[in-house]
Image 1 (cartoon, helix red, strand yellow):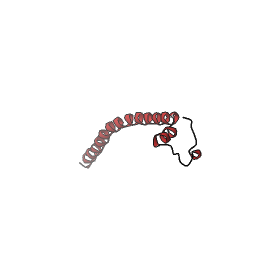
Image 2 (cartoon, rainbow, N blue to C red):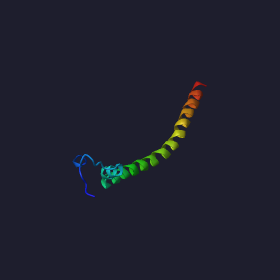
Image 3 (tube, rainbow, N blue to C red):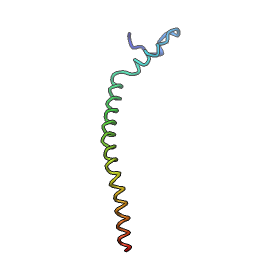
Image 4 (cartoon, helix red, strand yellow):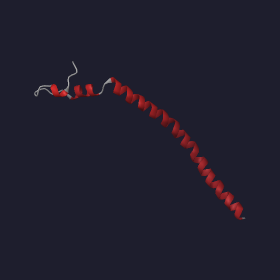
Length: 74
């Protein structure tokens, strides 16, 4: 089927929902969306383990400061 502009269809003919989706999602848009999704997932997969490793370090630093303050008061 040829790619027609929606407004040039006769009044009695409306494209089906699937035909509209087919023309609105062309290959370039889908490949761009997939590429962006892959980059986002790659970044998230690197950030989450880093957060999980840094969280105990911060908690231990707070505890170390409390111990240092307690020793200083003695």
